[in-house]
Length: 517
Image (cartoon, rainbow, N blue to C red):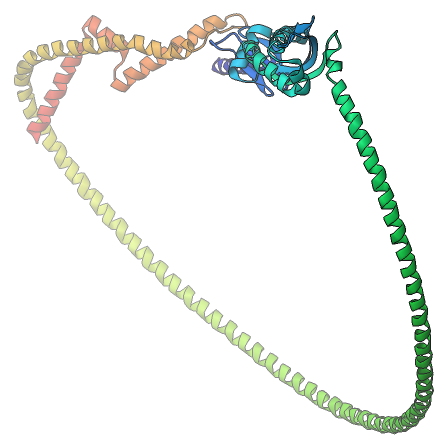
């Protein structure tokens, strides 16, 4: 049963862990960088997850999404708007907006655009931007707007930023595409500039043609100078070439003469080398002959040496064999002497062992004689003690009659005290019995539920609890040296009085023994 309960508890823990993991897995969310996941439901403030993972608690929290990507808004004035100089114009611009990533901006965007499509956000932003653009057009003159579009865009952006910020949006860029008017005022503003540009272009063309002519003349002059310089350089190069050829011819003749002289010198050197080589060859031949004679002498010396060495080795072997034979003879003699010594020692040891055994036998016989004497003395002493004990018992009988009368009063008192003591023990036992039962059942209180399979398991469980309680209570009584059955019977039938009389008799015997002593 304990094994089953233990395994049921383990299985329950495993199932609980699996359920928790499944719940956490079902609530796992991972937000991309261009979207904000808004997790709300627990706590006063929603959690914002951007570009990272988080866990949504199922059934208690909800997940909403907010688009953070860039949104392009095409802003056009629906009708002509008068400028500061009262010229009706229309403006076309492209504005890029996105949800603000600041804490306040995200919170405002949640309130205004949560779970909304981008088209809705673009429509709201267009209306705000168009109204601010109309407002800025009315404060600027047409010439300033046309000549400095960036200033106009910056002013519209600054004017619209607070309104968009209240909705959680930021203006990323503002680009003016075009200004138009129905009276052609913008076109007329460019006529003066066109004439000036044409004049400047004509002057520039004349200056360019003049510069081209001057440059052409300068180029012709430089070309003629270059041609003359080239001809002079060619003539100089030809003259240098002729001189170089003469020098090369001279050097060639010198080299040829040196080559002829070197050839003759080389011829003489080769002839000399041949003579030296011939002489060296003769010397080498003679040295070789001497070397051959030397080798013949060395061979003869080695032959004689080998013959002498053979004889010496044969003599050495003979001496070695003789020495080995002498050594073997001495070893055998030593071994024979050693064996003889061992035999003598063993014979002497056997004699000593027999002497020791004889001594041991004599000592054992003497010890037996001493034990017999001691047993005889012991028997005599016991007989004497028995006589003394009989005498003491006779004397104690007289004392017993007197002691019985004196002990009778004490017996009554002891009986009352014995009963009180036993009653106190029973009270303590029955007071502790509920605690014992509680301690046995306490492990079961930590279990939420128990499912029993099979017939008779409930009765078996109760029987196990009862058996455990009985074993613990019996152990408690055994530890105090008390039998519950005897104790209850003694209290109910008065057997405690008999126990008091037995104690009295024991006291009398003790008194007799003391009197004998």
